[in-house]
Length: 317
Ligand code: 3HC
Image 1 (spheres, helix red, strand yellow):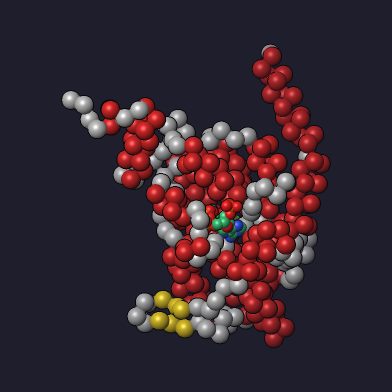
Image 2: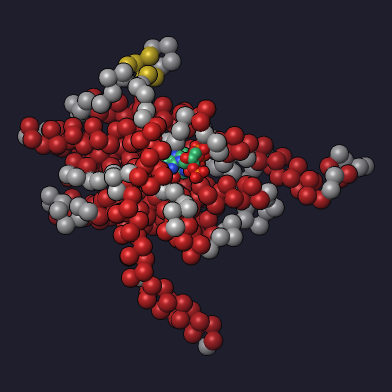
């Protein structure tokens, strides 16, 4: 019996099957047929996610030699090492879509590929390391827990692994902030200053409002995204405001207030001009982050060449 699908040209039949699969919440594996637009969408998002993990090592790396104790330094080193590993999982997952690591790195270096806005701000004091762990990793967890159910299977598997480590990152950041808030007046002031500088850029991490998000329609159609930018931002705010109040930190938003009807916080206007300035290369640290990555990537060329030569030698034996 001819089904509606079997009368369609091959490509349309394949697309209909693909849409059926994603609509049913089934996972898409690298060997499955997928529309070019789905593949491109994922390469864009996953490579930018990977770049974010690796660039994010810089602001924290800034404080390894200045950590206030051996324990603090060990924890920070472990976290930074985790972030590098997260980048590798994500680059490997993106490579299953047919893009090479070199191409992704070139896109980053040329400015064609973005990375998260948040890593273009300076880490000025030790409290910033607390704010980054607590707020930035806290925001990343909210986003990444949702991405565990993304339709592209390698991305989903990478998220499951990454989320296991992120909760340690968030907790160590919150511990730094809680400790400082129990410290001297100067330490409390330092922690509040970090809160003031990192709060709004952390809200921007979730992307533009849903009404201004050009990629979200496709992301939902193909179940790449399971929650909207604003839903995840709201979840982060509702959870984090209570954590701030618990240790005596003030959220730097004069319009923040609990909305009983929606069972969540109403919050002030986000400065999207700042967001667009930062994600288009004009934030406080964009140039520094990129030139550092390019320098270190070039310095590390000998390692890649040696590994490649070894691989060839093994092949020829
Ligand atoms: N930083 C930089 N660019 C951003 C951004 C952000 N926070 N939010 C959105 N954008 C960009 C998008 O990339 C897109 O630009 P493009 O077309 O040049 O790629 C544009 O703004 C429009 O945004 P959309 O909402 O339409 O784009 P998406 O559907 O891709 O949604 C996103 C944006 C929610 C960030 C989504 O890409 C996503 O979930 N990415 C994966 C998570 C991620 O990248 N997290 C980064 C942090 S990793 C991290 O924090 C490490 C932690 O361990 C410390």
